[in-house]
Amino acid sequence: MPTAPLDRLDYRILHYLQNDARLTNLELAGKVGLSPSPCLRRVKALEDSGILKRYVAILDAVAVGLPISAFINVSLRSQEREALEQFQSRIASCPEVMECYLMTGTSDYLLRVVVPDLESYERFLGDKLTRIPGIGNIQTSFALKPVVYRTELPLAEAAGAGSKRPAKSRARTRR
Image (cartoon, rainbow, N blue to C red; front, side, top):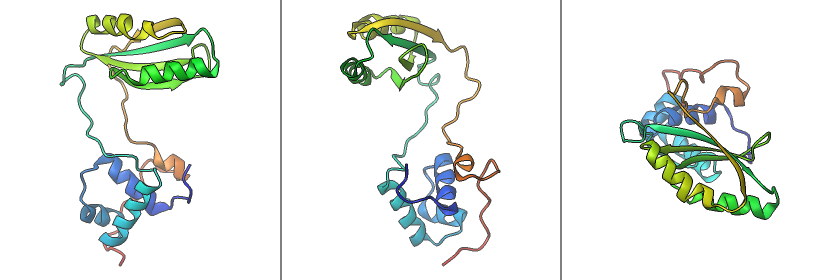
């Protein structure tokens, strides 16, 4: 949760950076209707607050040889703090695990794992996942194809705006 509320300009900056983090400060300032210095100060404040966590490149998993996505439900035998912490520590060290969520419902964790082939998944399962103490049940589903894959958070919803996208910038910039 941010310490200070985000305003319309903050949401617009975040929108544009989510779609193209390679924008120069000058380009970003032009898109959001600010001069470069105030824009840079806002970006720095968003970074310092932890809202802007990092800048990354998004790769095509199939193109780099990782076409298999497995979603794994893991249930532990015990939900005591020590068991949860041990599982989380061990699973965080597995590079195949792209996401891991502590869940409510029928399983304790949901993992998203990417691997090049089924043999690699079998090795991950046998050499890593099943060797974590305290696991009671593992259920895996394999993704056939992605239908929706987004990296952009729906900021309009967070801002309370009714539109899907932040408003377009005006032609002139504020000084």
